[in-house]
Length: 224
Image 1 (cartoon, one colour):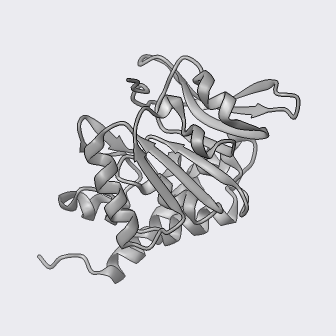
Image 2: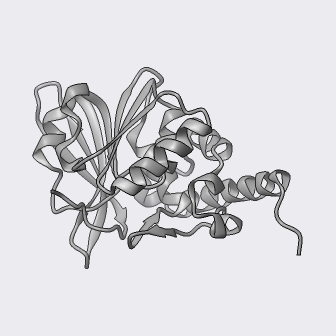
């Protein structure tokens, strides 16, 4: 059988976006609207997910499911990537922190929406691989480092938006401290048995309010 061409993959990517739209409509009661931000949808349509998965799995990149990337980690289901990005409400001038880089797919999506993205990955091999992929594909407004994402990236704080692709019982204090007043953090909250995708808004006075969206399943946030 012949391999998939870039044209084939573009068709599959458009189909993935259609499936995301269906999921959003079906989840409208939980997320509060029937459709995701068109800017998010366009980013999902543009970013080549097959470049951010393991090569043997490239043909599966546009199925709406998580895929293994090594070290018992996965790249998240496309709908969840789109939903978390939508909930973050990234503006074109925003400075965004992405915790849990993996192979760089979420950072690439965010880079299409924000002025600058800083992303932190605890697995050194992932950070090196993601940096190479992002550089080769021209995502120049993404900076990456290896480290404990729960500690954020203090040198570049404060951040307008923070996305965490791993679960914890509550947002790490360092991340809330590095969130700009008026900013927003999106992450899964809970244990390995039960998690909720949650939105945390920080008021201008520094108070944090939580809104739960829907049940999810992520790996736990690793710390050093």
